[in-house]
Length: 342
Ligand SMILES: [Zn+2]
Ligand SMILES: [Zn+2]
Image (cartoon, rainbow, N blue to C red):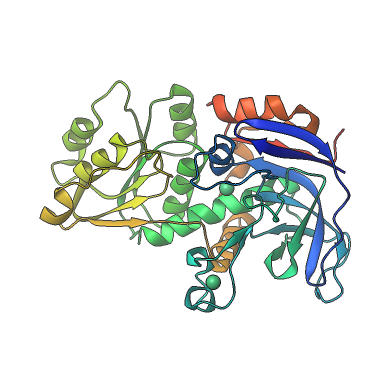
Protein backbone atom coordinates (compact mmCIF):
# COMPACT_ATOMS: atom_id res chain seq x y z
CA UNK A 1 0.00 0.00 0.00
CA UNK A 2 0.97 3.66 -0.31
CA UNK A 3 1.48 5.94 2.64
CA UNK A 4 2.86 9.41 3.27
CA UNK A 5 5.74 9.53 5.72
CA UNK A 6 7.00 12.64 7.50
CA UNK A 7 10.68 11.69 7.66
CA UNK A 8 11.88 14.95 9.19
CA UNK A 9 10.79 18.54 9.70
CA UNK A 10 8.82 19.65 6.60
CA UNK A 11 9.96 16.57 4.69
CA UNK A 12 7.28 14.28 3.29
CA UNK A 13 7.73 11.17 1.22
CA UNK A 14 5.36 8.76 -0.52
CA UNK A 15 6.33 5.23 0.46
CA UNK A 16 5.30 1.71 -0.38
CA UNK A 17 4.58 -0.40 2.73
CA UNK A 18 2.85 -3.71 3.46
CA UNK A 19 -0.85 -3.56 4.32
CA UNK A 20 -0.91 -3.85 8.13
CA UNK A 21 -2.09 -7.16 9.57
CA UNK A 22 -4.40 -6.57 12.54
CA UNK A 23 -3.12 -7.36 16.02
CA UNK A 24 -5.44 -9.61 18.05
CA UNK A 25 -7.48 -6.69 19.35
CA UNK A 26 -7.18 -4.41 16.31
CA UNK A 27 -9.19 -3.56 13.25
CA UNK A 28 -7.55 -2.56 9.96
CA UNK A 29 -9.46 0.18 8.16
CA UNK A 30 -9.38 0.81 4.42
CA UNK A 31 -9.12 4.59 4.43
CA UNK A 32 -11.51 6.50 2.16
CA UNK A 33 -10.99 10.00 3.60
CA UNK A 34 -8.29 11.43 5.87
CA UNK A 35 -8.25 15.12 6.82
CA UNK A 36 -5.24 17.36 7.38
CA UNK A 37 -5.77 19.01 10.76
CA UNK A 38 -4.08 22.00 12.40
CA UNK A 39 -2.11 19.63 14.60
CA UNK A 40 -0.79 17.80 11.51
CA UNK A 41 0.60 21.19 10.48
CA UNK A 42 2.28 21.50 13.92
CA UNK A 43 3.81 18.03 13.48
CA UNK A 44 4.89 18.93 9.94
CA UNK A 45 6.75 22.00 11.18
CA UNK A 46 8.12 20.05 14.19
CA UNK A 47 6.51 22.57 16.55
CA UNK A 48 5.71 20.02 19.24
CA UNK A 49 8.54 19.50 21.69
CA UNK A 50 10.10 16.07 21.48
CA UNK A 51 8.48 15.06 18.17
CA UNK A 52 10.14 11.92 16.86
CA UNK A 53 10.37 10.94 13.21
CA UNK A 54 9.42 9.15 11.05
CA UNK A 55 5.68 9.67 11.42
CA UNK A 56 2.65 8.73 9.36
CA UNK A 57 0.25 11.55 10.18
CA UNK A 58 -3.53 11.62 9.92
CA UNK A 59 -5.79 11.20 12.96
CA UNK A 60 -9.13 12.09 11.39
CA UNK A 61 -10.24 9.47 8.89
CA UNK A 62 -13.14 7.31 7.80
CA UNK A 63 -13.39 4.18 5.71
CA UNK A 64 -14.46 0.56 5.80
CA UNK A 65 -13.24 -2.33 7.91
CA UNK A 66 -10.71 -4.35 5.91
CA UNK A 67 -9.68 -7.03 8.42
CA UNK A 68 -10.42 -7.85 12.05
CA UNK A 69 -8.12 -9.24 14.77
CA UNK A 70 -8.82 -12.59 16.43
CA UNK A 71 -10.17 -11.04 19.63
CA UNK A 72 -11.67 -7.88 18.13
CA UNK A 73 -15.37 -8.52 18.42
CA UNK A 74 -18.17 -6.48 16.92
CA UNK A 75 -16.79 -5.64 13.47
CA UNK A 76 -17.14 -7.20 10.03
CA UNK A 77 -15.19 -6.46 6.87
CA UNK A 78 -17.06 -3.79 4.95
CA UNK A 79 -18.43 -1.97 8.02
CA UNK A 80 -18.30 1.81 7.61
CA UNK A 81 -16.32 3.32 10.45
CA UNK A 82 -14.28 6.17 11.88
CA UNK A 83 -12.05 6.09 14.97
CA UNK A 84 -10.99 7.96 18.08
CA UNK A 85 -7.24 8.46 17.58
CA UNK A 86 -6.34 9.07 21.24
CA UNK A 87 -5.50 5.82 23.03
CA UNK A 88 -5.46 6.11 26.81
CA UNK A 89 -3.47 3.68 28.95
CA UNK A 90 -6.77 2.38 30.36
CA UNK A 91 -5.32 2.09 33.87
CA UNK A 92 -4.88 5.63 35.25
CA UNK A 93 -7.58 7.54 37.14
CA UNK A 94 -8.29 9.74 34.11
CA UNK A 95 -8.81 6.77 31.80
CA UNK A 96 -10.98 5.02 34.39
CA UNK A 97 -13.21 8.09 34.65
CA UNK A 98 -13.52 8.36 30.87
CA UNK A 99 -11.23 11.40 30.56
CA UNK A 100 -8.63 9.61 28.44
CA UNK A 101 -7.83 12.98 26.84
CA UNK A 102 -5.95 13.78 30.08
CA UNK A 103 -4.07 10.46 30.30
CA UNK A 104 -0.36 11.17 30.83
CA UNK A 105 0.72 8.16 28.82
CA UNK A 106 -1.71 8.55 25.98
CA UNK A 107 -0.75 7.22 22.57
CA UNK A 108 -2.09 8.85 19.46
CA UNK A 109 -2.73 7.35 16.05
CA UNK A 110 -1.09 9.59 13.50
CA UNK A 111 1.09 11.36 16.04
CA UNK A 112 3.52 8.84 17.55
CA UNK A 113 6.06 6.50 16.02
CA UNK A 114 4.56 3.02 16.23
CA UNK A 115 1.05 4.44 15.73
CA UNK A 116 0.89 5.23 12.00
CA UNK A 117 -2.07 7.35 10.96
CA UNK A 118 -4.56 7.64 8.16
CA UNK A 119 -2.45 9.25 5.42
CA UNK A 120 -2.23 5.76 3.98
CA UNK A 121 -4.40 3.27 2.14
CA UNK A 122 -4.89 1.28 5.35
CA UNK A 123 -4.59 2.05 9.06
CA UNK A 124 -4.66 -0.27 12.06
CA UNK A 125 -6.70 0.84 15.10
CA UNK A 126 -7.52 -0.87 18.43
CA UNK A 127 -11.08 -2.16 18.05
CA UNK A 128 -12.21 -0.34 21.21
CA UNK A 129 -11.44 3.00 19.49
CA UNK A 130 -13.34 2.19 16.28
CA UNK A 131 -16.74 3.82 15.88
CA UNK A 132 -19.42 2.62 13.45
CA UNK A 133 -20.83 5.30 11.16
CA UNK A 134 -24.58 5.61 10.69
CA UNK A 135 -25.61 3.93 7.43
CA UNK A 136 -26.57 7.14 5.66
CA UNK A 137 -23.39 9.04 6.56
CA UNK A 138 -20.89 9.56 3.74
CA UNK A 139 -17.14 9.17 4.32
CA UNK A 140 -16.41 12.90 4.09
CA UNK A 141 -18.86 13.58 6.89
CA UNK A 142 -17.51 10.57 8.79
CA UNK A 143 -14.05 12.10 8.54
CA UNK A 144 -15.39 15.33 10.10
CA UNK A 145 -16.73 13.56 13.20
CA UNK A 146 -13.33 13.96 14.94
CA UNK A 147 -13.08 17.76 14.53
CA UNK A 148 -16.76 18.08 15.47
CA UNK A 149 -15.96 16.08 18.63
CA UNK A 150 -13.24 18.65 19.39
CA UNK A 151 -15.91 21.37 19.09
CA UNK A 152 -18.36 19.43 21.29
CA UNK A 153 -15.68 19.17 23.98
CA UNK A 154 -15.14 22.94 23.71
CA UNK A 155 -18.88 23.45 24.18
CA UNK A 156 -18.72 21.51 27.44
CA UNK A 157 -15.59 23.29 28.67
CA UNK A 158 -17.25 26.66 27.97
CA UNK A 159 -20.29 25.71 30.10
CA UNK A 160 -22.41 27.58 27.57
CA UNK A 161 -25.76 28.75 28.92
CA UNK A 162 -28.84 29.63 26.93
CA UNK A 163 -28.58 33.25 25.84
CA UNK A 164 -24.79 33.58 26.15
CA UNK A 165 -22.79 35.94 23.99
CA UNK A 166 -19.74 34.10 22.71
CA UNK A 167 -16.63 35.42 21.00
CA UNK A 168 -14.45 33.05 19.01
CA UNK A 169 -10.95 34.27 18.16
CA UNK A 170 -9.77 32.51 15.02
CA UNK A 171 -12.08 31.36 12.21
CA UNK A 172 -10.15 28.29 11.08
CA UNK A 173 -11.88 24.92 10.91
CA UNK A 174 -12.04 24.46 14.68
CA UNK A 175 -13.24 28.03 15.30
CA UNK A 176 -16.02 27.55 12.74
CA UNK A 177 -17.08 24.23 14.25
CA UNK A 178 -17.08 25.76 17.76
CA UNK A 179 -19.49 28.38 16.39
CA UNK A 180 -21.85 25.58 15.32
CA UNK A 181 -21.43 23.77 18.62
CA UNK A 182 -22.16 26.76 20.86
CA UNK A 183 -25.14 27.74 18.70
CA UNK A 184 -26.46 24.20 19.18
CA UNK A 185 -25.73 24.54 22.88
CA UNK A 186 -27.87 27.66 23.25
CA UNK A 187 -25.56 30.63 22.60
CA UNK A 188 -27.58 33.62 21.49
CA UNK A 189 -24.92 35.82 19.89
CA UNK A 190 -21.75 34.62 18.20
CA UNK A 191 -18.94 36.96 17.24
CA UNK A 192 -15.92 35.70 15.32
CA UNK A 193 -12.64 37.41 14.61
CA UNK A 194 -9.74 36.62 12.31
CA UNK A 195 -7.23 38.47 10.17
CA UNK A 196 -7.93 36.55 6.95
CA UNK A 197 -10.85 37.96 4.89
CA UNK A 198 -11.50 34.49 3.39
CA UNK A 199 -12.06 33.07 6.84
CA UNK A 200 -14.27 35.97 7.90
CA UNK A 201 -16.42 35.26 4.85
CA UNK A 202 -16.70 31.62 5.99
CA UNK A 203 -17.57 32.78 9.50
CA UNK A 204 -20.45 34.82 8.12
CA UNK A 205 -21.64 31.86 6.10
CA UNK A 206 -21.38 29.62 9.15
CA UNK A 207 -23.74 31.80 11.08
CA UNK A 208 -21.62 34.26 13.05
CA UNK A 209 -23.80 37.23 13.99
CA UNK A 210 -20.85 39.58 13.75
CA UNK A 211 -17.37 39.23 12.29
CA UNK A 212 -14.42 41.40 13.22
CA UNK A 213 -11.34 41.79 11.06
CA UNK A 214 -8.88 42.07 13.91
CA UNK A 215 -6.10 43.01 11.50
CA UNK A 216 -7.98 46.20 10.63
CA UNK A 217 -10.22 46.89 13.60
CA UNK A 218 -9.32 47.29 17.26
CA UNK A 219 -11.00 44.16 18.59
CA UNK A 220 -11.15 45.27 22.23
CA UNK A 221 -12.68 48.64 21.38
CA UNK A 222 -15.15 47.15 18.88
CA UNK A 223 -16.41 44.63 21.43
CA UNK A 224 -16.62 47.16 24.25
CA UNK A 225 -18.50 49.64 22.07
CA UNK A 226 -21.00 47.03 21.08
CA UNK A 227 -21.38 44.95 24.23
CA UNK A 228 -20.36 47.46 26.88
CA UNK A 229 -17.42 47.38 29.30
CA UNK A 230 -18.89 44.16 30.65
CA UNK A 231 -17.90 42.37 27.49
CA UNK A 232 -18.97 38.91 26.44
CA UNK A 233 -19.82 35.82 28.50
CA UNK A 234 -17.38 33.36 26.99
CA UNK A 235 -14.31 33.71 24.75
CA UNK A 236 -12.73 30.81 22.86
CA UNK A 237 -9.15 31.47 21.88
CA UNK A 238 -8.82 29.22 18.85
CA UNK A 239 -5.96 31.25 17.41
CA UNK A 240 -3.54 31.41 20.35
CA UNK A 241 -1.07 33.65 18.63
CA UNK A 242 -0.10 35.61 21.75
CA UNK A 243 -2.12 38.82 21.38
CA UNK A 244 -5.36 36.83 21.24
CA UNK A 245 -5.02 35.63 24.83
CA UNK A 246 -4.64 39.19 26.06
CA UNK A 247 -7.60 40.27 23.91
CA UNK A 248 -9.69 37.43 25.32
CA UNK A 249 -9.05 38.49 28.89
CA UNK A 250 -9.88 42.13 28.10
CA UNK A 251 -13.22 41.53 26.41
CA UNK A 252 -14.67 38.81 28.60
CA UNK A 253 -16.99 40.04 31.33
CA UNK A 254 -16.10 39.77 35.01
CA UNK A 255 -16.69 36.22 36.13
CA UNK A 256 -16.70 35.08 32.48
CA UNK A 257 -14.75 32.23 30.91
CA UNK A 258 -11.80 32.10 28.55
CA UNK A 259 -11.12 28.75 26.91
CA UNK A 260 -7.75 28.10 25.35
CA UNK A 261 -8.22 25.87 22.35
CA UNK A 262 -5.34 26.56 19.98
CA UNK A 263 -1.81 25.40 20.58
CA UNK A 264 0.13 28.55 21.55
CA UNK A 265 3.44 28.84 19.72
CA UNK A 266 4.98 31.02 22.43
CA UNK A 267 4.36 31.46 26.17
CA UNK A 268 1.73 34.08 26.97
CA UNK A 269 1.81 36.51 29.84
CA UNK A 270 -0.76 35.98 32.54
CA UNK A 271 -3.08 38.98 32.71
CA UNK A 272 -3.81 40.71 36.03
CA UNK A 273 -7.48 40.85 35.07
CA UNK A 274 -7.75 37.12 35.73
CA UNK A 275 -7.57 37.80 39.43
CA UNK A 276 -9.09 41.28 39.54
CA UNK A 277 -12.21 40.28 37.62
CA UNK A 278 -12.42 36.61 38.59
CA UNK A 279 -12.08 35.41 35.06
CA UNK A 280 -12.12 31.65 34.66
CA UNK A 281 -9.37 30.38 32.44
CA UNK A 282 -9.46 26.84 31.18
CA UNK A 283 -8.23 24.65 28.36
CA UNK A 284 -10.00 22.23 26.08
CA UNK A 285 -8.04 19.20 24.97
CA UNK A 286 -9.24 16.69 22.39
CA UNK A 287 -12.44 14.87 23.33
CA UNK A 288 -13.82 11.86 25.12
CA UNK A 289 -16.10 9.06 23.98
CA UNK A 290 -19.04 11.17 25.10
CA UNK A 291 -18.02 13.99 22.74
CA UNK A 292 -17.72 11.54 19.84
CA UNK A 293 -21.17 10.17 20.59
CA UNK A 294 -22.59 13.68 20.76
CA UNK A 295 -20.78 14.67 17.55
CA UNK A 296 -22.34 11.74 15.68
CA UNK A 297 -25.72 12.67 17.10
CA UNK A 298 -25.67 16.36 16.11
CA UNK A 299 -24.34 15.55 12.65
CA UNK A 300 -26.98 12.85 12.10
CA UNK A 301 -29.82 15.14 13.08
CA UNK A 302 -28.63 17.63 10.44
CA UNK A 303 -28.02 20.36 13.00
CA UNK A 304 -24.46 20.88 11.80
CA UNK A 305 -24.60 21.99 8.14
CA UNK A 306 -21.36 20.22 7.20
CA UNK A 307 -22.24 20.11 3.50
CA UNK A 308 -21.28 23.80 3.46
CA UNK A 309 -17.72 23.07 4.55
CA UNK A 310 -15.28 23.98 1.76
CA UNK A 311 -13.18 20.84 1.28
CA UNK A 312 -10.40 20.14 -1.22
CA UNK A 313 -9.60 16.49 -2.07
CA UNK A 314 -6.27 15.01 -3.11
CA UNK A 315 -4.99 11.51 -3.81
CA UNK A 316 -1.99 10.50 -1.66
CA UNK A 317 0.35 11.02 -4.63
CA UNK A 318 -0.39 14.76 -4.59
CA UNK A 319 0.72 15.18 -0.98
CA UNK A 320 2.90 18.24 -1.70
CA UNK A 321 -0.04 20.20 -3.13
CA UNK A 322 -2.33 18.89 -0.41
CA UNK A 323 -0.10 20.16 2.39
CA UNK A 324 0.52 23.43 0.58
CA UNK A 325 -3.24 24.01 0.33
CA UNK A 326 -3.84 23.00 3.96
CA UNK A 327 -1.11 25.32 5.21
CA UNK A 328 -1.78 28.32 2.99
CA UNK A 329 -5.25 28.43 1.43
CA UNK A 330 -7.43 30.22 3.95
CA UNK A 331 -10.59 29.72 1.91
CA UNK A 332 -10.38 25.94 2.31
CA UNK A 333 -11.56 24.61 5.64
CA UNK A 334 -10.38 21.04 5.25
CA UNK A 335 -8.03 19.26 2.93
CA UNK A 336 -8.78 15.56 2.67
CA UNK A 337 -6.84 12.71 1.17
CA UNK A 338 -8.72 10.12 -0.86
CA UNK A 339 -6.25 7.23 -0.40
CA UNK A 340 -8.14 4.77 -2.60
CA UNK A 341 -7.78 7.07 -5.58
CA UNK A 342 -4.62 6.66 -7.68
ZN1 LIG B 1 -7.47 17.01 14.46
ZN1 LIG C 1 -4.50 6.60 31.25
